[in-house]
Amino acid sequence: MTVIQTRKPLLETLKGQRADRLPMWLMRQAGRYLPEYRALRAEKGGFLELVHDSAAAAEVTLQPIRRFGFDGAILFSDILVVPHALGQDLWFEAGEGPRLAPKLVDATLEALTKAPERLLPVIETVRQVKALLPGETTFLGFAGSPWTVATYMVAGQGSREQAETRRFAYRDPKAFQQIIDAIADLTISYLSDQISAGVEAVQLFDSWSGSLSPAQFEDWVIAPTAKIISSLKARHPEAVVIGFPKGAGGKLPAYAREVGADAIGLDETVDPVWAHQNLPKNLPVQGNLDPLALIAGGATLDAAVTRVIDAFADRPHVFNLGHGILPDTPIAHVEALVARIRG
Ligand code: CP3
Image 1 (spheres, rainbow, N blue to C red):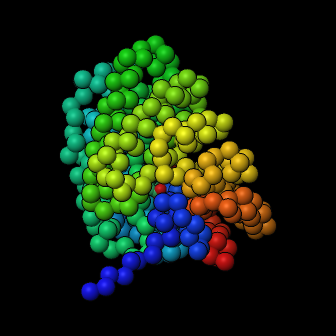
Image 2: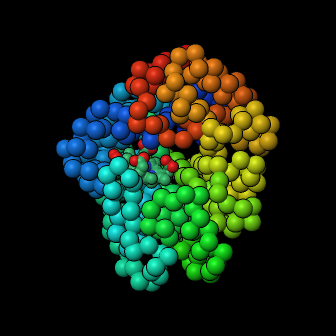
């Protein structure tokens, strides 16, 4: 029997080929800008309830694929399920954001009772999506990078410039290293489980890497990220990893050289022309339309899209936003963007 290989433009691009069409997906593509997401979230009672209900989370993962036909489906979950599995309580305050307790400025890691079973519903979501996903769609898993996850674990919530966590890391680098190591170790097994259950590539979100000094960036971003990627590749030689060090700016070339990611995500503050000139020649890049240009729409959106596409015309490129799509993004603008990228 001849097996016909399904073509997956996104996966091929992440592996370093230039596909015959530009693949696209959008960070946070499953979420509040979609009425079908808001309806299901209301029915389930909240965001975490949705994440823990594998059938509902699988449905939410597929909603943007059905509506827009994106090339990638990203697992519906959150980066904070890892602290939850390390034993912190996790909840979302309406209109404010995530909360974790006890926060690690007040408590030690050893005081927490690990609860790895809290990740099982997410792995079940992977299995269910895998069975339902169109053949040409690439399935993306993800986790937060240790630094970004640690900022929530230490402060117990999102924080301005991550000052509390940076102070902690200067004051007690040994204790902070233990936190980074605990997150990294669980992240390796969690991503490995996602890959075993069916995701084809994983993205490491380092949303707050921009607040670190160069030396801290080496210790808390580059070193643990390199460890996660090399361990994953030892377990799964085929593993494909996208590193997304948001805000890294001038530290991007070092990150690209040192962490071993297959592709690098760029946020909207990075000049795409600069990135093309300063990143290794054939390294695949992902990004980096400003989410606010998508909200603006019209000629502004068109010009911003052209700038990104033209800059990366000579290397493998995955079209994406520079950060997550915002809840007040008009659906008509997403439709216009898809039509534009699809040519
Ligand atoms: O991209 C996707 O569609 C997949 C799902 C996904 C979510 N969060 C769902 C979510 C992903 C990849 C994330 C990543 C995430 N979560 C990050 C890194 C990327 C980034 O955006 O910086 C961070 C820092 C978090 C932590 C987090 N989760 C915060 C700060 C918040 C509250 C702020 C907000 O946007 O509501 C969340 C909640 C969250 N995670 C929502 C979704 C769809 C909104 C929940 C809701 O109200 O329905």
